[in-house]
Structure formats: C-alpha cells, structure tokens
Length: 431
Image (cartoon, rainbow, N blue to C red; front, side, top):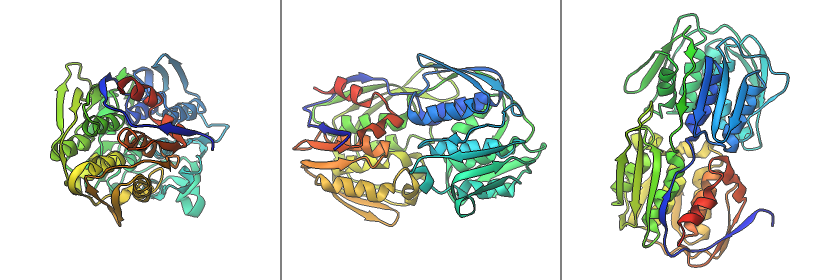
C-alpha cells in the first residue's frame, strides 16, 4: 500500500523544538503584502503546501514573491494593482486561501476562477459567497456558488452589517477584506462567539484602522495597506500535538519555543490546564502584533472535563488531538458545540472517532462533538489513515507513541500541508 508509515511506541519524549510558523498568519502575510503599497518581508514563513498555494495564486495575479530560506519578500501591488489571471487559481487543499482570496477578488475589476482539490470541492463556500453577494459581488459555482469551482466577476461593493451564523475567522476575514473595497462605507461582521483575530491584528500592522468589540469587527472602505515586515510566530495548532505528547507519554519533558499565544487561539492551553496538565507558559520579550511564548510541558496526571461554548472557536483545529489527550484522562471528557468539525478537511467528528476506535479508544460521536471515556490502554496493531487531513495524521502519529503495538499510518504525506518536518521533530524528541 502506497504511503504507509510504520510507527511505534517510545519510552519518553524530551528536548526542545521550534514548531513551524503559524499557518493562518503566513497566509495573511502574503495576501496583505500583495495588496499593500511597497515591499513586505515575512520571516519564519510556513513552507507548507497550503501556504505555497496562496503564494502561487497571487503570483498568477502579477505579484512578485521571492522565497529564500524561510524569508518571503512580497512586492505589493496595492489594492487596485492585482492583474486578471490568465490561469485558474488553484488553491490545492487550502480553505483559508479560498475564502480569504474571495474577499479580495470580490472588489477587483476582473474575472477570476478558483478551483481546489477533491477535499475543497466538498467544503461549503456559501457561508462566504452569500455575504459577498450581498455586498454586490458576482460569484457563481456549483449549486449556486456553494462549492468550487467558483467564478468571480469583481464589482463595486457596498458595506454591510452582517450577522454571521457561524464563528469563523475565514468568513469574517473575507467580508472585512471586501469591505476595504467599498467607497468609504462601513462593513461590520458580528459573530455568535469571537473567532480568531489574526486578520484584525495584521490589518492594523499594515496601517488599517479596525474597530472591535466583544463579538464584532468593522472597517471603513477606501483605506490602503502600507507594507511592513512580519515575523510569523510558531503555530500553536502545530505545537498542540507535542503539547499533548508531552502530557501523555511517560517520563517526558518538552520545551516548545516561540509559539504564538494569541488569546483567540489558546483553547488548547485552557484545556490542558482544566485537565490538570503540568504546563508552564514563559512569555517572550520580542512581542510583535502577536504575543509569543515558550511553553514547557511535562508528563501529567489528567482528569476528564467538558469542552463547549465560547471555548470551541479557540481550539477548533486542536479537537482531534484533544480527543487523543482525553483517552489518557481519568473519567469522561465531553466535547460539544463543535459541529463546525463536520466541514473541515474531513468530517473530523466521524474520522477522529473511527480512527481512535481502531486502536482501542473508548470514544463515541455525538451530533456536535464526541464523548471520550478514559483512561484507555491504546492497543495499536492496526492500519489507520489520515484521510488526507494533516491534523488527523499528526494526531495518529502522536497516538503511536503510547500504543502497545505499532500502527501503520496511511497517507502520512498529508501532514506536509502544515508541518513538513513533523516526523523529524518527533524523531529528535524520541528517546
């Protein structure tokens, strides 16, 4: 069977690693740099497949982007400087590229077409296309613009006051980016819970005035972006896998350096503390527009908890590995209000439950989450699959560190999307 990786138990994990740059911030840095006036330099950029899809799309729109040893230089064209692409814009597996780029394209004066891989073709886009249409964009696609491929004919846009039915940073970001193209009108997005705020923070770094309150964000159209230099902190979603590994693998102590601890993303830290993990957060002095810290995690005695409500948007991408964490906690862990997991790279509720069940976890799916009963002795001795989902792949690789028997991981290369050197780091820490 192609791309089958055999993974075995380890006795402990110890040492320090610096996880790759944040995926969400890397995407935005390239996009905002492309529509800014002047040259933007991005250091610690994530060289994963998703972020390189963003680079490729903006190069097709005439933006010069140079990549040298983790330093990316973007020659900004300004809000009105993008060129009509002669080719289809292929986003690969990247939902962030798709949805945020739609917000930028909605106000251009040209036609463009977006396509992605088989996974992207199944992911709902109407949550973005509908509000963009309300702003005046012309967008068509399968099932009236619900799925890719999508054709966008840019138009003059008007500001809207939009009540989003979901707490989604991608939806919010697309609308705010489109809002910059209005004629000095205000565009407001209100969410049921506050989603991650990387866009608001980075827009300010590029000189845009953004207003925020507890559940909403807004911009006034007509503002231009001014080029700046961006340091991309380590991705807490990538760090989460080694945070969980450090907590559940016996005799372990791991230091993760320069991790972004944006308060809209730190749900994994909240959960680890709620479950009794031995964790220390050491803030760093070199703060930019995003807070950064070193995080020390040690083997821990864990207890079950309930994860729901406002906490869910702060850890939606970490739920697969939190489910693994819960298998090693005493008692029940209940995850609810997480129906958003059904429209990620896979239906992550069903996929997580199915794959962890294969290796001996006591886990059941619910309509909006899952219930995990611990502490489980994970047996392994199974072939599991990432299902093309990088986070499922990494979760299963961490699970193999504590399974009694080895496991075979199918489609391990999916991990390259966000953490190309994941297995190298796991090997460095393994004892």
